[in-house]
Length: 617
Image (cartoon, rainbow, N blue to C red; front, side):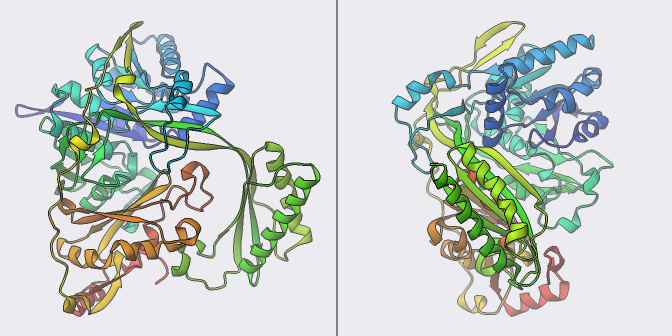
């Protein structure tokens, strides 16, 4: 069903989910477009692997994304079959064979003839003793191999997916693969790309990176959110993929959202760390010279990705049991609400510790009071106006569930015996904590497999080369910074000059800053030094110290990308911060003062350039 423009084959791929809990409206919307060749789903992240691992521990037949059957694909199988499109999803979690079997049973019940394949070989749980004996260390924080493992998986590549499609699969289910592989696999199959077509594999990876986060590329979470129409019916992305690796990003006609150079640029730089060295299983990508062209309304052409030889290792992820956590949310209303909340938290933690001692239980491993509503997340740059409404997020971690439950019960006492203005608790949860351990594993020790029609065969990845052999070449010196006389004019808010997007990656987070116009980039580069960014996020650093910051230039998109290290202790699963997913870290940067010539500052002021994109003028 591939579209053909002249003699050119075009593969149209719809990205339906950014997570296993994404909206139920995306699939009907994309199916109603009626012109797709593939529908792809990204269900997995480090946190969700822990969820699926715990699910399977409770019921060995589960461990996969059940919404795939009940929400996203199961209800639409007749329409999928009628349109002749194919489906690729990493919804298999830790049990892709189980999901494939359940899906095949559903297909039989509906009297359809869709063929299902599944990709496996990523599960490492039967090798834990071997891996622990090898003394693997966490690739970010140098921690030792954990105990009490919940899940263990290598991040496989795209070629097993392509092999399944070549065998006639209509639906391909995988476990843990690189997120972008759900798109790269179909492109490898459709265009006949080989393991040595490195630039094409990098381009296909980029297309996958744009599509696998759903509506984030069609205006979701966009800096200029007021410019994005109709969130309720936001269009999910469609990539029109060409054999030369280029892709035109668009969305279904008549839907909300926005596809612009800005929305696409933000998504390209989302969580990639060094854009010139984005490493996945099949290729080492360079996105630093990618070019974007607005070819029509809601249509952006993406070109310029380059590839190098893949490394000889897979990234691997262990999730493990990290004890128990209580989180309680207490509203405190009235004068000096923040001060009262701090005193109340201290008293409640002290009370609970006394109860632990009385029961001969160990102390909490962590206690923290996160004030919501007082701009504590902004550190020294917050607007501390003495808020009279605060929500106190109380966090208490304990090795045992009993200890966590002691605090969950005791914190209720605040409403009657402590701070005036304490209202009814909004929520209290006692949950198991999941830790994440990331490391590199030699490809020769992992055997990816593909199963279809009851037959399993190996689909090994290219052997790859040691990381040092395919490292990026030294970068050329960037354009010179503005002359001092040009920097000494007037400071304007960063948001007037740039778009910004942020996201977590383990214990660190990324912030991309993209110039709205190429001529703004020199001013951004001059102001946004690593030291300046580190100081801006000082309040997030370990033990109050400014965090380490790396900066990477992205000349193709007139951008810079920052990596802020050790600022999300515990990662998304265990960080106590208000924003463990780092979705708001770029928002904290929008008021960063950037010196520009006085004439440009006046021009921006006269045009009202994006002043309204930030609340609180």
